[in-house]
Length: 296
Image (cartoon, rainbow, N blue to C red):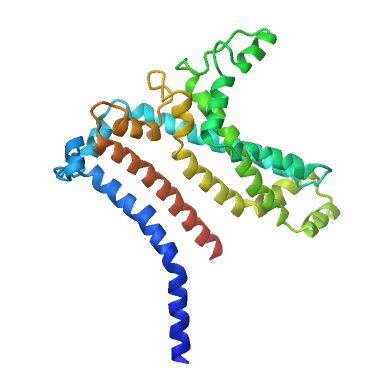
């Protein structure tokens, strides 16, 4: 009996070994290196030789004292919050629409997945073309409506909103798929009982659909938050964080510090990246704590 138990344990460890190795190589070690990078004063020479002096939290103090910290933090918050609100709202509206199972609903759902399946470089390039100040389709439509052109990508007043719109468009399909699955898990008998009690459509949504969908909504928002915090491709391709830093977020700022200058600042760049990791970790812990409270 003990031999069988031990053999079963070894088999379980054998199945877990590839996953554990993957997590160590592609998550734990890069995270350790990023933390170590943020605690030392690395230059190009010391990065190659590995003899960078220890700086402690000096790189973090440099980041906090940098004049770009405040605007980058504000842009990150606006970009993340606005993206999450509109992605979730539009995704939920579409999920409620498609859960009715009308003819061709499956085909239309598949078409809505296209933005999610496209490579980010393709999506960002498409939006760059659409929002081009001189030859963009959006400005052409505004001209037909009798409105003047807008410098979507080159104006400090519009650049952040332009990349946010593109990110919302890309994130809506993910919210649609997850929320649609959550809606399908709600028993139809609950709605039938509510209808017999005289509840109208709005009451059924706020008293049945939304409460029962709350766990799925929470994980959808959490995953969307983690993804949006680290969005780099869309912003860099469309505006490169400009003009004049008007669309710079922590993700683009970290890249610019580490790789966007002739004299790279590896330590401060890694420190900014770690701030993003801490932010995602904090929200993840809040979600886990809230989930445990509900289960208790």
